Image 1 (tube, rainbow, N blue to C red):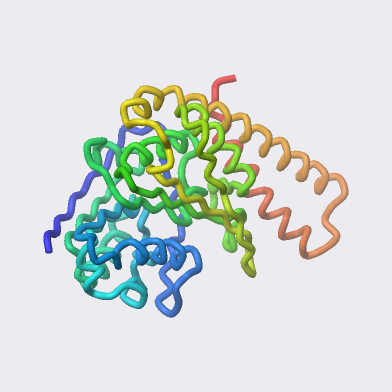
Image 2: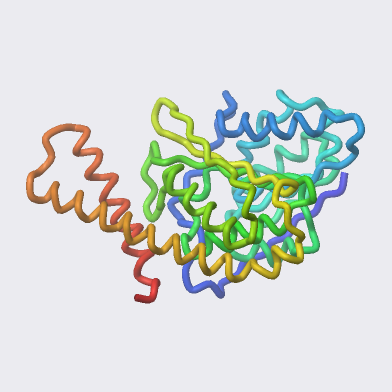
Length: 299
């Protein structure tokens, strides 16, 4: 098995691209629903006896929760087909992921540490992946690079590749600086993105699932359904990034106005229940994160 480890950190970004108040989960006792969904997709592909290689880029891999129970779902023969690349902004997270990955018998293993905004520099467009995952992370990523992150990930899919994104509409534990998105909001963002990429007929759905403590959303973006060439995607990529970011900025202002109105109401009338007290704290976190995001948007 080939393994190498690269440390790549840039200090050139004006704004950090992932919040520091991140709490990457590692639950060794159970597989989380979002991870089971991703692993089931992988299982269905790698068990094909005709397949000899499956390339997987795990963006913002955290502490390795996504692969921790991989051996419970995918047998050793199928795992030996997987070329696994793990990328995260924190070296201590990547170290835990690497330790687990080395025990799984992958065909190859590559782990990288770096700013999420710089991942396209390390994984250039001439590299392609059959599967790219971005789980429980969108709320942590600087909203001003979100559209570019999506586009650059799409440009790195193989002909039959899939980009799998999953996140929560609200956080069980509040994170300072986090901006959450509803499934409906994310659907609007992807509709604008695909329209601007010149993909008129493929309309992937953002699905929503209710869990005990939150509602989660997910989307699978399958390259085979795009119906356009890589050359056309590259040609339209910059305008797609810019126009999608305009839409994101508009939605940020709307979210800010909503949180401000809620705080105005709570300031005027107070909170009458434990639920309203919790909403107050959550809205204060939202207001702070949105205020920071809007500071760098030109009027």
